Amino acid sequence: MGNIVLLDDLTINQIAAGEVIERPANVVKELVENSIDAGSTAITIEIKHGGKSLIKIIDNGKGILREDIPNAIERHATSKIKSIEDLEKTYTMGFRGEALASIASISKLTIISKTEQDELGFKVVTEAGDIVETEEVGAKIGTTMIVENLFFNTPVRYKFLKQDATEFKFIKEWVQRVALVNLNISFKLISDGKQVFQSNGNGNIRDLIYVLYGKETSENLIDVDYKEENIHITGVIGNTLMARDSRKDQIVYLNKRNIRNQVLTSSADQAFKGGGTGIGKFGFFILNLEMPADYYDINVHPTKMEVRFKNESEIYRVFYHAIKSAILSKDFLGNNEQEEKKEDYVQNEFKFLTSHFGRESGVINRVSIKDENDNNGLGIGEKRTITVNEEKTESQDGQELIKREKQRKVDYIYKGILFRTYIVVEIGDEIYLIDQHAAHERLLYEKIKANYKSNIKTNSQMMLVPEVYDLTHKEIEFVKNNIEMFQNIGFDIELFGENSVKINGIPDIDYRVNSKNVFLDTLDEMITNERSTSKDVEERFIATVACKAAVKANMDLTPQEVDNLIQNLLVLKNPYTCPHGRPTTIKFSKDEIAKRIN
Image (tube, rainbow, N blue to C red):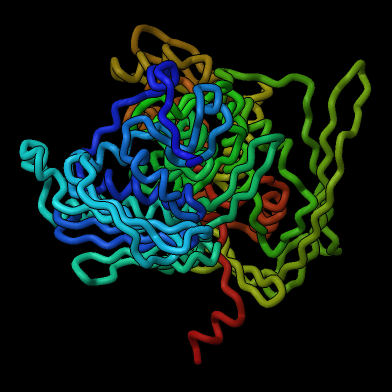
């Protein structure tokens, strides 16, 4: 008895039927997905004239039983499910049993297939859905699908096709995208007799990204491998150098099926905030989520691109953790000890980003920095050893309970400052350039945000003489609408007349800043780049204050200020970039320098 059966009316009525073949790329998608479901390890796609005259798919899968081939072109005939209950345990790409019937109805379709137990292959030819030829043929194990004269009997649909090059572009983009998640399958794409793409199926995503995106992209990736209970997220994300102006390089799969989902997109945006990409940019990621089939409903739209999760908040949280943990997995200033799991920091960030004006009470982060050097200054060529101890304590009934204690030790030699902007230190066989503005901006960002989250009202540096500023109508409206945010960040501010404010204090940021510039520059930046959601406003506001208050390029630092900056960077869980995405450090190895000289 064959494997392909006609579904009952109840099942047909409950699945999202209506598969429509609009262009050649739809045909390629459906046939290649069938090849994947058949367990193929090598798939060849041959195209002529953008798929209008020929689409040929050859695979080495398990093949179709001879008695199943006639049923395969019937509508709602499938071997993937037997009843509606099977949808909650189905992991195959296809399951509705419509695609092959739809393709057969608008083309000349030839199916050649052979299973392991068959001595000969079997060939079936259909035109407009009717079988016109059947015969035994010699064939290898697997299936060949040949689609010719697409839309020959639907001229209106044919008329709306684009030029051959455009239609092939759609096919090529889809094939490359499916290859990025099916890394153990070798794909070959041929157009008008010319091979235009091939993946080797070696399971290495970086090799394929090198082919598709280039060397620079492949060298700026961070691996993601995050598992929590029944959800496993794997793939790669781009570092801050890979930040994009659009979302075109954000690719997400669900059990290897390419999907679109606003929950995942929003989660990724939050995870990249504060240093992963920079404000106003989008992160690069290619990620696959593996989870049980009963966690989601893929049966929302005939394209199967839309998906509905049963617990969206949980998926949002896990996806965020996967990306954020990967961002924080890099080494810093030569320190790559991985005993710090970063989980507390990631969870803290998640709470802040997902809870408007969220506050934490009774939590104190204490950091002690031990300078294991006898002198008080920082001399050029002098070796420094710094040990950082971090303790997290919680106040409970007057008692402080130490939750964790970690130690990080770094030896470095201070070499000086280049262009009054880049601090140079030597660590082992590597030279690090520390951007003094980006590094100080990150320090201030973390401090202001910590005060803001903990609702510390005493984080203002009081001015000797309060200053009154006259504002425009738009500026005063922004201040009125966000005065609580100004106060929580550290501005001691009050309304003073109809269009004026009085500033009694600015955020206590321990540096020589111009109070007027900090307030007015921050206000101008916020109004220029105003965001609609409160969380975006908060995040941008904190980052802007940090940027405006941080030391600038060409600003001279004393040796002690340089030393303090390096010491405090080592304390941070996320020291890699400023909140706008600029790297705080750039590393050059001795070997890299030698190669350039030689």
